[in-house]
Length: 184
Image 1 (cartoon, rainbow, N blue to C red):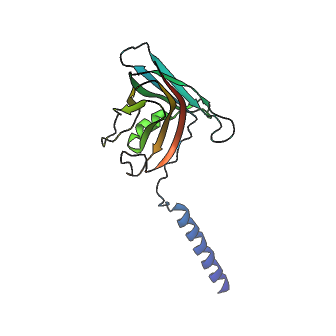
Image 2 (tube, one colour):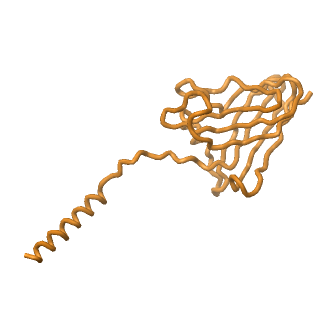
Image 3 (tube, rainbow, N blue to C red):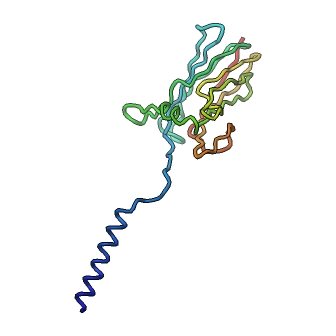
């Protein structure tokens, strides 16, 4: 009788382990943030196609550690520029991983926020997602009088339907600040 009881407990344990091993977990899919080390943007003067400025922010070791390598942005006063995010990379991978492609595929969950401090540069005409909310892969930049300051681009990750066209919801995937001069 004792042996039968031991076999019954052993069989129950095996069945229980087998069922738990086959059971699918019901956890929601987690959309992990991508590591972004590099972003490049191009500013093209709408009245002078030869006036093209490309800026790059590269931080291969992430926050802390070595300082990022940052381009200076110099734009002509009182001009309009077409702005485009030309690359978003994870250069810790070999070869570098093109993160721009994934952000484009999930543009309903992402927002580029364009900010200036101290300089006469404003942004408008952002590209939009399927819900007609701004994305910011492209924009229009308009300069005013000569001035100096900074230009910051922030990539916000706004999954699960929280995107509402503002910077607030979600989390920051990247924040890059460039020295900016608007010159005569």
